[in-house]
Amino acid sequence: MQPHLPEPQALVALVDALRALPGVGVRTARRMAYHLLQHDPDAAHNLSNALELALNNLQHCEKCNGFTQEVICPTCVSPNRDTSLLCVVETAADQNIIESTHNYKGLYFVLMGRIAPLEGMGANEIQLARLLERACDGLVREVILATNFTAEGDTTAHYLSEVLRAKGLSVTRIARGVPAGSEIEYVDAGTVAWALMERKPA
Amino acid sequence: MQPHLPEPQALVALVDALRALPGVGVRTARRMAYHLLQHDPDAAHNLSNALELALNNLQHCEKCNGFTQEVICPTCVSPNRDTSLLCVVETAADQNIIESTHNYKGLYFVLMGRIAPLEGMGANEIQLARLLERACDGLVREVILATNFTAEGDTTAHYLSEVLRAKGLSVTRIARGVPAGSEIEYVDAGTVAWALMERKPA
Image (cartoon, rainbow over all chains, first blue to last red; front, side, top):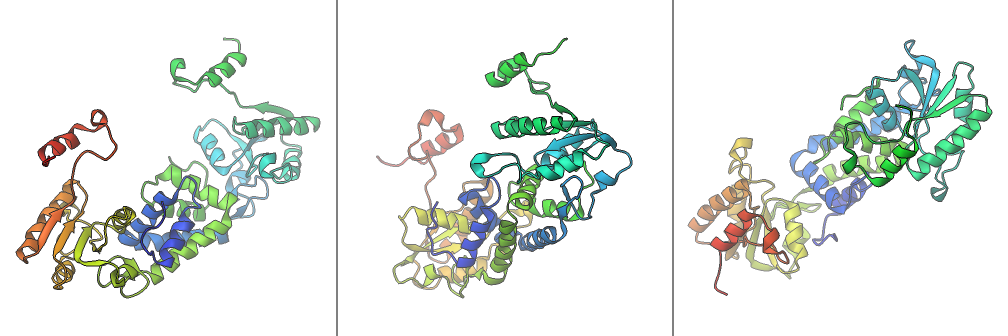
């Protein structure tokens, strides 16, 4: 949607800046801008400050590469985690979801990306050297690859499994299949095909 | 979704701040925060600055109450607009949509809200005094009410029509009916009922 009124420059700049958010197009960005200015200027101030605060205070954990305000994050220093398990995820959001299962007590390594040659993301961009160093600390016995089941996520998992296995580590991949609680009739055929291929003894 | 990892405070604050955006829940806010921090810190800086710039530079036009960086906005000072028509809208976004029709050459008054007693929005909150002053400038002949066709928008239109008509102005309401280009079969019954009630000579 083109701006049709001679819009003030500061408003245009705000709409443009909001479009950088994932999943936000011009129309949504404009709605957000109007909302903040019309109903909630305090929230706009607060958001501006929170952005600067996050940019200035968050850094990557030296061990797991996740976001933290310390040098090493609370998860990595926790004495309650199983140091023999290392789960590799693409993003901190994925890490959060795995943590929400309350079913994993090992540690993490956050790639902050995945191998995607078309986007110029290679092994260096995903911090491979740091991952290798982390995985070869002598404590880790099994590396669990929890990258996405997309083309790029699968490529990344395949590549990492080769490199990590060469270091003598046990490498596993999280299961792919029909989502828990879903009816097969409504699951896409690709997922069902994988579920059949990767069937296991009942 | 509860945060499951001991998340850094600056990240939690950013996620909370992003939730103030319309239509953004915890999950989306977290995705936005991770995206900005992981992929686009420049955009985060830019958004922070744009918010401050907008808050500091935008004000309400003295004539139409819309957002502008001047005292009176470019639309209100334009010599090409028909000063006998005044279109009343709830928000600057609505004004933009009407402008996008390229079918209206009059001027605007932006309420920056609507009458909604349950939310504590009364006649004072929608700048009624300023609207009356604006509409009674001696040039305006017709006030077009373009508030939303919601309960609150209709209430606002009804109230404004009473007050403005008492000032001797001609007051009209934009048409309610079946959307252009749509098939009646797929339009909701409420809209069709209104379209029947408000039928006009063919």
